[in-house]
Length: 82
Image 1 (spheres, rainbow, N blue to C red):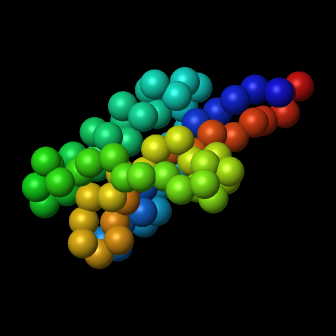
Image 2: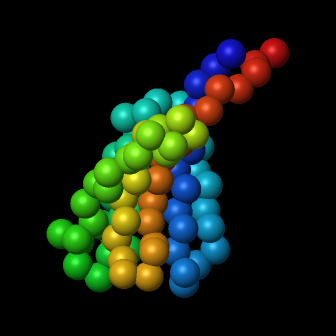
Image 3: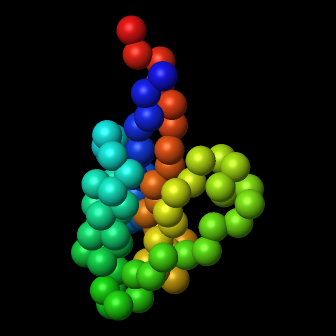
């Protein structure tokens, strides 16, 4: 098994993007950078609070950046590698 971290960008004005990373640090850094870039006010792009269900589903980070539900999140998954 191998771990992968996926940055998911959900913005009402663009298609949903999924960007894979091999390290959590790189994925988190990219997610925060995207949130700051897409936010009307970059200082509003703050880490959200993950609840137990989010953590159970593999969420590592959630950064809401708009009033319309726009956000970036990082999820951790395991992959079978031959």
